[in-house]
Amino acid sequence: MDNKLLKPKNYGALAFFPMLFFLVLYVGTGIYFTSIGVSKPFSFMPRYVAVLAAITVAFLCYAREIPISQKVDVYCKGAGASGVMLLGLIVLMAGGFASAADAIGGKTSMVNMGLSFLPRNFIIPGIFLVTAFISTCIGTSMGTQVAMIPVAISIAQGAGLNVAMAGAATIAGAYFGDNLSIISDTTICATKGVGANMKDKFRMNFLIALPASLLTVFLYWFMNRGVSASAIQGSLDYSFLKVLPYLAVLATAIAGMDVVLVLLMGIAMTGIIGVAFGDLPFFKWTMAIGTGMEDMFFLAVFAMLVSGLIELIKYYGGIDWLVNTLAAKIHSRKTCEYFISLICLAISGTTLNNTVAIIITAPIAKALGQKYTIAPKRLASLIDIFSCAILMLVPHDSGFLLVQKYGNVNYLDVVSCAYYPILLMFFTCITIQFGLMRTPEEKIAAKEQENLSINA
Image 1 (cartoon, rainbow, N blue to C red):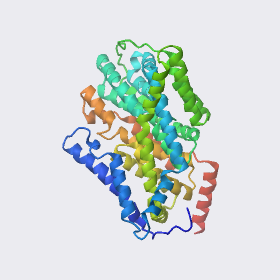
Image 2 (cartoon, rainbow, N blue to C red):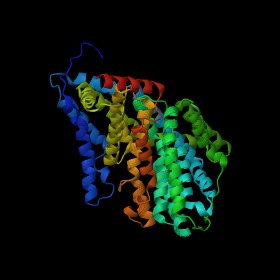
Image 3 (cartoon, helix red, strand yellow):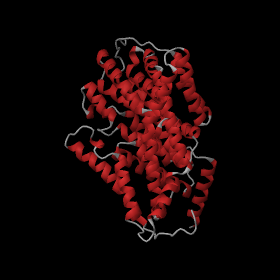
Image 4 (cartoon, one colour):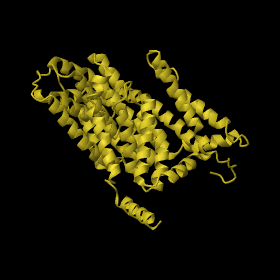
């Protein structure tokens, strides 16, 4: 920034008031309309309007001696940062790919292919595994839940199995993939927000999620042992060719290819398969891509709005105050990791939006991570895990509402079978508590900090 720009006074904790104002306005309105039983309660105060009101507060209520034009420059610096623009590009491409793949019948084929392999005595754990695989490939918990919950409930009802448990397994599988998929908006926001590599974050997340998911599968099997379900009814036709773009995107991303190239390749594959086999004419393919991109505009724009607001908070001294305050109270990397996890969990559970929670938490996590030498992939993993895990437990998340609607079960029935989110947070806390999965640089920094503590 130009050195001639006027410097505002340090507002400390007060600098965070605009962000608090946004949360109270958006969440408070949603909770009020939820309490009076109105449908779509969070639509009455759109997140864009709430954050715009918060930005207005940040412009008008701070450093009045500084011209608005200078504050706008500061805001634009944050909103237009290269990382924010890259995030916007990637989420738009991810939306285009998901829509194009769905348009050629890829999502339906993916669901049917997974269900066709379920053995009779492994239905509920199989539902969890199939849903997890689908959601990892298509990158959306909501899309997976909408496709899978009615199917899973019907299977459980027809086979005489625990409907609430089938619903819980579907919700868990959907968020498993949301947490891991490289085309998931949460993964994109988490990695770009803290400067992590997607491949590294995927590997760390997977190593934490693996024992939690395996134990979840065992528990679902154990709870249903001896129950032989009837065969799945209905047509489960699928085309492996239509599933191929999902598998190619997943494989190349894990292999370390740049995510922009990965998504370009995936979009091209949907066009080749759709046009070549006559399932999707060229211009319907382009329209599908456009529709998917339009569906993701909200995320790109919202990320820009929030990033600009956070830059203003930083300009007013809020981020420095928070880091310095926590530094006085946080005396170890372990405490820092717990704090980052807790604040992201709280925001996600409050807003019912894990992406919003990650966008808000990422700059704070990045600043604290630099102070305590926490690897970016670790920061991305923590905020992604806890932002997703809490949504598998709160009663008004979309997954629970869908299960209650289709399965005629209550919240307590479903949440009592929600093993995966508890296990996921448990195993993550183990890695925090015992300092597991650290990089060589982190181990050296931890040793130096330990020596300083001993000398002090």
